[in-house]
Image (cartoon, rainbow, N blue to C red; front, side, top):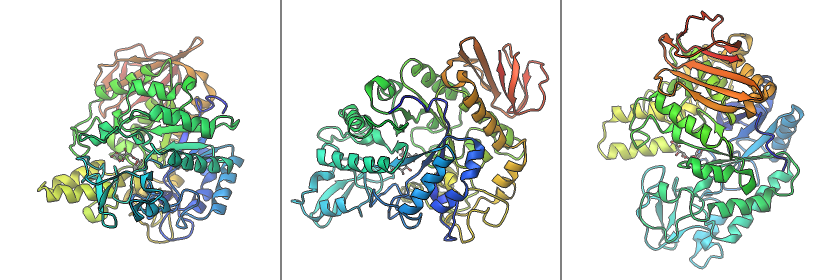
Length: 537
Ligand code: TEU
């Protein structure tokens, strides 16, 4: 596995269900992705990450897999997959699959065999107990489900239809490694690993906070080193592995991503996407830019010597970046989307663009609970209402933080269903697609799309972006995000006003302008609303 080719690379995440529908059933598919490969090549991204496309009852939109070695007919076939992979490689891009192996679907043959009887040869491929502990599921309610057949309980940290695999069992690990080797042999270029820090459970499964107790358990590094030996070692292909790790710390991330330890290339940390909440995700809290910068700067400096960062503002589990971290009002949406991309893409790490982020897509105007589809949101709503919470308040939280915000169909043009489908979309298209869509963006040199292209171009052309040292500036400034990158005598100054008011910048902002989201620079020591500048000096 040749090293670190992904440092100057940019990854684009596709949520197949919502990207492009080629057969008019209202659900995106592989044929639709193939139709849009030229668009992605024009954007300039290097790697495509596909959220799960495997056979699934779709209880959690594919993160509940019932067959790891095929493609769900909703999305297409293995032949369609091979055609997609060929199209990606022909255009010089790579394709990374989603690896969901903390749990399977309860309709996976492994689980069906496991639940059949207490003596089943696959009984301990999952976690069964006569009595549950007090663990709660990430999707509300208990993390244990009673199973009538054997009158025992099985563990599911996510939905009832997502039973957790028992990684203590070497047969489970070997079966997973064999499946991964199959996809790599098919030409896949790596894996995004779903909640991979939860696979090593705490001995004895003690009562307590399940998220904390299962975060980076005692054998996690042993398992990832074994996986690396069994799956990746000895392959000369350029591969990428990224582990999604809710709750991971900088210290743990340096261990996971230190190349000398041969575990994974990078992790998704969650600290910066949990600042606008009081404990629970649904207890909303205003975001303070100083706190956001503090977290991002700590990760930048923490992995400067050892390890590597992934960089993201949003994905299929998070609300839209411009609505959450920017200002999605018509007056400021474009500039704030560009400013957010600028401060993220020029940091040290591999940037991830979530489909539609390059257009400045926004959160959606969900009117009522009937408009939501995501199991996490629907379960939370049911539990909150049952607990007597005010429905209006709960709905406001869902509108603000709900995952469906990220899952409204991709906006390709201004037509009825935004060019996503000729059928009835599984989730309503955001009505602002008349203005916000790829067709308009590609045709407009001043669009968010072309700003992303320019940022990706800087990472591809300037070694300082991939390898330069990171130095934070103005950490205590409540409005301005600023830092430098330096390498071999080249320095980049990156600064952005992350507010909708003009502010004064307390630093020497002179240099050769490389990129900005304003056509001019008044050179008067101020930054206008959401003004972002990249200068070389
Ligand atoms: O997400 C794990 C995870 O951390 C999220 O569920 C997160 O807690 C929540 O969405 C934030 O509000 C991964 C996948 O990305 C997600 O889509 C799946 O639902 C989940 O695992 C289970 O597979």
